[in-house]
Length: 92
Image (cartoon, rainbow, N blue to C red; front, side):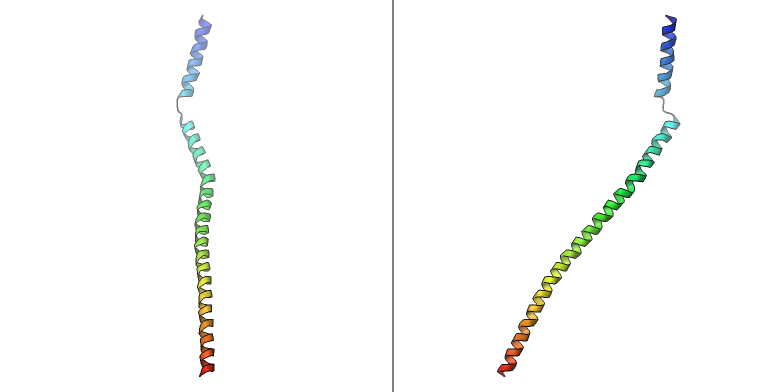
């Protein structure tokens, strides 16, 4: 019987020791958090930068398409004015 009680006491002693939070455990957790942050922060930062740049590119592309359409309208207007001037010059 005493062997069983001694064994139970040892097991309880080991379990009580594992249940307590030690500074080593705290620093281990802190180290893991810093380690994970070091690898995830650059990825998040790069993803955000890519998102903002692609948004700017899309905005510039829309403006470019609008300017191309405006250029076509202006060219058509200039051609119409040239045509009118040629016709008016030949009439008078």
